[in-house]
Length: 117
Image (cartoon, rainbow, N blue to C red):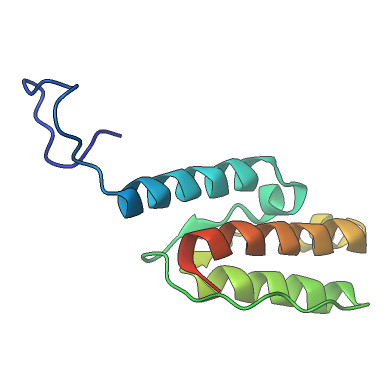
């Protein structure tokens, strides 16, 4: 990704064109993408962006029920302009509750950095 309005013939060491906010957004978006690629729950859900990232985002609630955890995770995605791709629910519910809870907490941390709390 190159700085906005940076022409190929412009000297790269000249005045920076990236605002701090733009750099922060790109960095946080990249960190979110890395997390999505590595997280076992999100590998199953394969979320994709359906709109511009929006916020603020609410922290996921803890639960003793896998279904509630998954619903909360899907809600967290939707809240920020992401949607799960078609997925195998059996594969998702075969995961330990702790893995699903950890995924929701990790996703919240990444989204909070991106869109606010």
